[in-house]
Structures are given as structure tokens and as C-alpha cells.
Length: 554
Image (cartoon, rainbow, N blue to C red; front, side, top):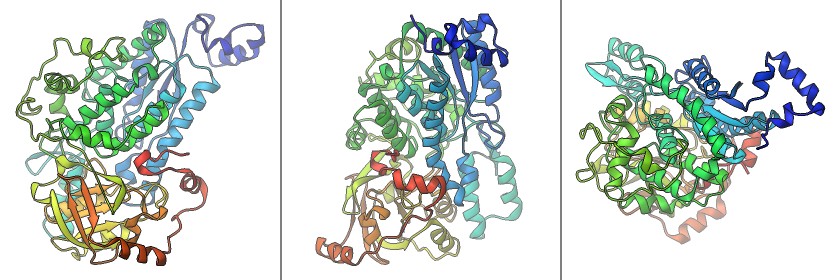
């Protein structure tokens, strides 16, 4: 069967191409084999990526063992934690599009036959998956693995505790020594941050949707098992090429339904909704926000991983990982077992012999944390196209809440008032003009949510934004409000003191204002221009679509 790489290695016309490949050190033998792009986002600025050089080496070994020629190529990445709280966060979501475009560029420019994608952190995982769906050449994803949990104050912790510590410190509830202890001991080494934050959510869902091998989401970064997994991924890409299994064979509507089902059981980051919508767009699979609530109404939440609960990814791994979660969901026929996966086998075949090894970490299907899933979508006059909340991380007393709006046109102003103690119990903090277009870049609001949690206000104060939340956020943190303020959404009409009604069980979020009052305010509305209009972010602001469609560039 002809290969894509024939376009650069076969025939007398391609002699100049071959001469350049020989300059890279490739031999006749290597040029005769399938050329596999090993796409590594290795970096020395992202803790989740500092071990990807070793993962890439293992993948290359696997490719070579299985008869392919590995070709290492790069991808960029942003550490959301380091980018948090300043202009850097505006670049995070936008980087997803750059990553997808760059992988497409490298794969097509060099006619690679298949791809092993090596991401780990927040936007790199979906960016690479989006490229795979767009290219539709045999591809498999293997991440760098999760970080081990840290320890301070006599408890097991992860990154969210550091951000919450800032709020506690600012409120005089934590001394300098404890604050420094948190800084030094919360993140002990390489890997994606140890809770069910966005990176681990997407790595787990990559496995659930079928684009990664079992174990990808939970095998710790520091283990030999992670290296074994990478070698097997390198071997497996050769099988996918032989069987001609492509991403769109895997990324079917039923596979997205499986992934969303697992998302509900796991209590994933709200960002995973955004990324699954974007991936569905690239795979040309119809996916509506309404499906989330349909599934959330019947899929129980089986895991309470940080920040929702005390467990970290290493405990989920020891309990059997994502296959063990799926084995519980199968007991009520919640999953389609017939779907092909990157293993070359079906979901059902992958789950043979799998069991839940720790019912404290993965609740049995008959005794879940809740009968509803971990994510919910709310609609109403404040979010006519929907908004998203991590239901599993909301305190029971905040599931229904009504309070006065405290309105801010940027994150900086909101966080300043939170730190100054100007937010009161019962308030609803509204942060707008932080959406995909208005930000631009749809910043994560981990700083304000963590400050509220650190000040012990997460059970009394809600936060609503057209921006995003980190997977490390907890409390009544309601994001992705669509339409966003910059597009004239009703969130732009909210005034200080307006009463906002939140009812998560009934999927509603409303301003206590009449249609007539909203119309009158709209007549006087003067929209703010995007905060950045030049450079890459300026282009992004002009081209990005709404969050309820995945914030995909048009």
C-alpha cells in the first residue's frame, strides 16, 4: 500500500528530498520504513513536560522495535499554573490552536505516515488531538503522566492548595513559615499536577475516548510503567498503520458519549467540556452542550479527586485507573463496548479482566458520591447559550444560591477586592470581558476562586465569568458564560447589586430582571473592545468562536 512518505522518499524526482534526509543521518534502511512523527512538547519551563524527552526516547525505541523510523518533531506548550494571574494566561487557550496548526503543518509538510503525540499539560493534549482529528492519519497519544502528590501541614496536597494558601496568607490565616512550606512541598517533581485538574482530565479522557492506551491518564510520571507505556505506544502506532485505523475511526459520536460518561463519573475539569467540543468540531462530529446535562442526569459521580476531594491521581492509578472506572460504568450499560480504540481492540476487549481495586477511591456504581455527574450546564437569561460548572466541587449549601452581583470588568479588579476583604458572604462575583474574544484568550480564574476558598468563603460566595476556571478551582465557580460580554451577552448588562439566582440542580442561572429592563439596558450598552488588538492575540480575538462551540478559531 502506498505511504504518505513515498512523496518524499520514492522515485528519481525525490532525490533532492532524500539528500536532505540523508543530511539528517537517515540511512537507506530507515528511508524504506514508515516514517513516524514523534511529536514532543518537551520543555524546561513546564513541570509536566520536563520528562518528555525520556518519554520521546521510549516512544522512538518502540517505533524502531516495531519496524518504523521515528522522526522527532517539536510542539509548544504553556504551563497554566505559571501563566496564571497575569497577561500570560491570555495565551494559554490560544496556544491550543497554535499547537493544532503546527502539528498539521509538520505532518503534512514532511508527509509523515503516522503520529505519536506526546503532550501532558492543559492545552497541549487537546491541541494535539485536534490536529490528529484534522489530519486523520494513524495517531496515538501518550502523555508524560501525573505528578505525585505533595505534602505539607501533615496532609497530602497538590497545586490547588498553593493558590488557596495565598488567600489564607492574605487574610492572616497562615503564617510565613507555613506559607513557605506550601511553596516548597506542594509540587514534588515532574508530571501534570496531581489532582483532577485540566491536564489529568484530558489525559484520562484521551484514554476513555480511545485515542490513548489504557493507563495513559493515571500512570505516574516517575514510574518505569510510564516508560513501558511509551514504548508500547511506539509499537502500537505501527499496528494502527498496518490496520489503517485512523483517528476518525475512533472519534465517533458514540466515543464522545463514552468520554462524556467517564467525565461525569470522574468529576473532570470544566475545561474538558471546552476541549471535547473543539475536538468534536475537528472530527466533524455533532456535539451539543445539552448532551452533557442528559448524561449528567443519569451518570453517577464515582470519584472525588482533588480539588473536589482528598484523593489524587496516584490513588486512582492504584485503584485500577480509568479502566476500573469504566468497569463500574459497564455494570449499568453506560458505555458502548463495541468501539475500536488505539489498542486495535474494542472498548469491551480492553476491559476484560478489569476490576475496581479500591472502592474508597472509585465508588461502586451502587453507592456513588452522587447520582448526578460531576459537570453541569446551566441556562437562563444570564447565559442564553449556556455556562458550565463542576458540580462535584460545589458545596451542598451552594447548589442553590441567590445573592447580589459584585461586578468587575477584569480579573485584576476582582482579585484586588477579594484580597482587600471587600467581598461578603452571599455575594455573587461577576467577572466579564474575559471571554475568548473579550480577554482575549478566556483566562482561567484560579486566583480569585482559590482566594475565596483560602478565606473560607467558597461555601458562601459564587463566582460567574465568561472566562474559564482551572480544574483546580472549587466552589460555585460558573464559567464559559455564553454569549460573552464582548459579543453583547447579557453578562455585559449586569449592574452592581443586581440579584442573581443560581439553581444547579435545575440547570438555571438568571438575573432577577424583566425582559423590559434588560432591553432598556441594552439600548445604552457600550461594549468594550478586546483588551489586546495586535499580534497573535489580536488575530485570535478577531477569529475565535464562542465558548459554547469550543472557542475554536473560525
